[in-house]
Amino acid sequence: RTGYPHLCGETFPCGKNDDHGRFLEKARSHAKGLGVPVSAGYSKAKADFIISMVEDFKSKVTAEKISKASDQEAAKMILGLRGIGDWCAGGVLMHCLKRGNIMLYGDLTVRNYLNDLYDINHNDAKETVVQSAADFPDNAENRNLIDALVTRNGWEPYRSVVCLLMYHLEEEDLVLL
Image 1 (spheres, rainbow, N blue to C red):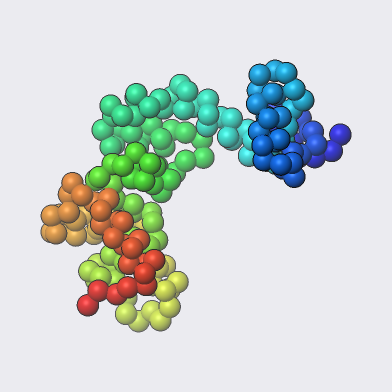
Image 2: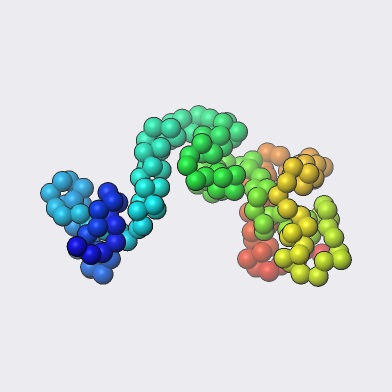
């Protein structure tokens, strides 16, 4: 038997080169317990991670639980999942759950644009973006400086909008004067 590990950890011929409809047919047949397992092309470790995420979302983080939770409670639930950190949890809250008051402190684009636009902790002596980013890391001091900026500008409860604007500036390569 050759091919990639199947989600159950066994190795079977990979169906990735099959016609998409045929692959789905095989996968659905296997899910019903009728057919031969079909590989999705994931490594065993990645397959284990995906399976654990699915199981966690069935028990630990249900849609009902997370919809009733405050932003902080929802973040704690998401952070309790294997392999999820601050940046990912904030992204899920902001992009997937459409929470309006999320500040993505760990996002390099957000930090750099806020630092450049509002001179939070800017070091003009640095010549490159990489050096500038290294001078404004995601740490407690800089999070406090960002929070002070949020308070001064009255951005709460719309911090997610600020993050989205920073993304827009980066995507359009715009600079505000």
